Image (cartoon, rainbow, N blue to C red; front, side):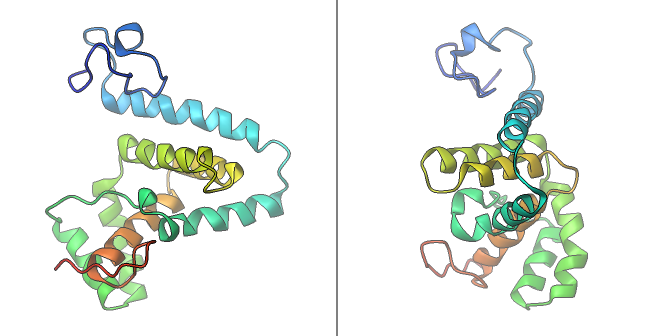
Length: 180
């Protein structure tokens, strides 16, 4: 646990100090902690959604896909230096080329998709639900989506972050940001 001191909260999300949790030498790697966090949150989310009908689940899922448009915390953090795949996707978004976006989003996601990025998005959704800014059931569906192989929230998060970066979309606060 290189980035976590003994008396800091453990990175696994348990809320306990690292020295009493995962702070042992040669403990789990951050990627493994993220996987464990996602698995635990998926179990909790499934319990929260036990009585939700299929139609309600679909409605909640539609809200999940729109979350990155409404809160910047649910936009994936982009690297400072964009890879050629991310830059091509950014250009397709700027050109409003829907076919190009559909074609290029897969390779771009392959570079950004890892358990830590997914866990960061899950934590953001759960924090928004705890703060009362989104419905807890929407957050639960978001967590479940983030544990699937082809996460729609992850895709939407990357596309929205790139759209904001080229000025093709406004931030949730209404600002127009252009960084070319």
